[in-house]
View 1 (tube, rainbow, N blue to C red):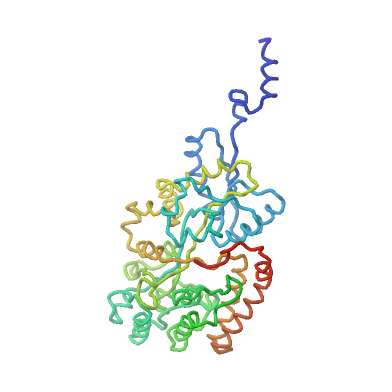
View 2: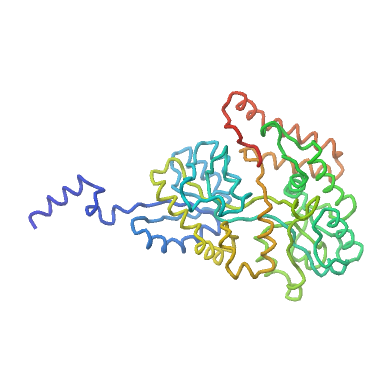
Length: 428
């Protein structure tokens, strides 16, 4: 009993030595996660903590609407978490701020080959990965299989020509008022068509627009013709009161959307139509292999200021384990980032999910520059002007390139002075 004060003093002087700290020596990781994922990831934490008794994970759930600003504020205030969920289009921005730690290259848990190549590439800046995919998404076609069959097609065509002919046949058959809904307040489809036609979107090492060049123009013309021929309505998504109701009514027979709508279509469409709709990979200009789409989803990133990077990467590796990825899918419906996890029967046997598995092998990243969101907004604006006839196609694309050149003026200045890493901003 007389020795206890001395023992306590020794433990205070040697804090951190085994046996002296007890529970106080546990490493506490701060993990910020967004939206629904932030709500349910806490259910995965106890198993990790049992496997790693020296690590405690503290999850903070953040609404997506506040996440970007909160992360930027935390970076400025040097109060970032150890680990966070980042939309994979945010990786370039936070890398430009020097906020992210590179992914360990000697860990089998973070092998690029375990992931879809196009998704993995969204995390790679100038040859190094600064995040690892946590879950994935992309966009493809949701369509009324019954209306396509009524128009004489047993399955979705795989190339542009066949796709356009099918759209025209659907309209001619009277099965739908419009063959496809392409909301004018969205930029994704014209960008996807341009990428499919071989456009890099940006030229001169990611410093100028390449939208007026022939490849993007080819996809742009295809897109405009769908409106000119009455196959798509002149409407934004805000002008469609309820897309599920209008899809069921036959107001349109197809829409390009993502996996978040699988559950919505299953819940919101009437029972008699549950066997009448399907999903399909996007057609390409020369066939299925050229039918690319965008690489989407969220990544896990460790912040450079974290003094617990090794433990944070250990938790990230746990979240990427195939068994944990499968459990995460069950909890959220988010598509697994690891290819192995797609072998689970619930995914392998789902005919609506398998087209996503195919499409994920054919996805590409948008240019990995912080200015991309500004550029995307200009794509939407100029495209809508061309569709509505306020500008010719030539004028719209020339104006778009001028917009992009202004947005990227600072990037050109930095590149000229060697302040932008080689390869940054260039699409794969």
